[in-house]
Length: 300
Ligand code: SF4
Image (cartoon, rainbow, N blue to C red; front, side):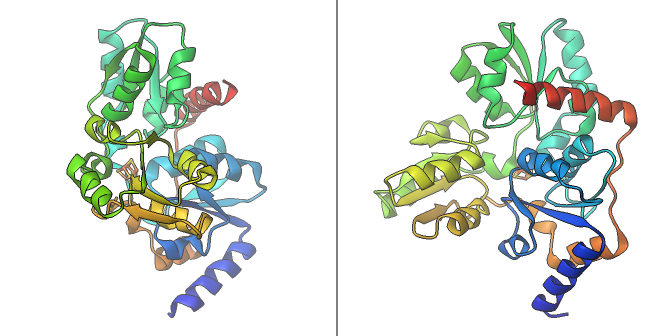
């Protein structure tokens, strides 16, 4: 089937089945065309929860679709590719969190939203890359267990001065952005402002003019007087920035690609809607505990 025919068929099925399509910032640009909402995982899940849709199709990775299901347990949540997982989320399991808790009794656990539902259920509170510092600061404890991302955790440590007990997770797409890549881009674009995601390594964060979440990047680039930006995060983010701010120029770190994010194609979204696959199911007890950890963050 031609691309336009697939897009048309997705749009009509979406209407027929009362579905909403969520598209993460790092998706392929052609997936943006069928989106009801584009954004980061929590923002998308919250928007979908506010709709009256019966079905949510999440164009992203598994933990994102799980977050949508945690916030909307009554809706059918579909992930178009059953193998689209997040390597970082899979690096820290609920057993790892239970072990960290038994080794560090009475220390609160903060889990980044990039975790499985089971890990969220073991946590006291969740955080995003945008609010991680604020969440950790709000806790009445000088020590905090932070999972799964070692880079975001070390950034939080740096910003709060608290004793952060780090896990061993990392995002390979961000971990493989090295300082010489930023230097190379800067050489060709000396006027460009460098924006890094807090999932980047410390030596890359240290070279950045701004350290921002994906949502923060859009806001900052819109408001900044600068016209050129080097974007140190998954390279797909540049497509989102170009779409939002077409009159400015963005340079990606080309090699920073999340293969799991790119597993979603138009054909798979169509198959997902046609066959109502692949359904996300979360055990009720886990859903309730994970919901409580997410709500605690949202209430702050
Ligand atoms: S970009 Fe990194 S954190 Fe995001 S889904 Fe891919 S592996 Fe996970």
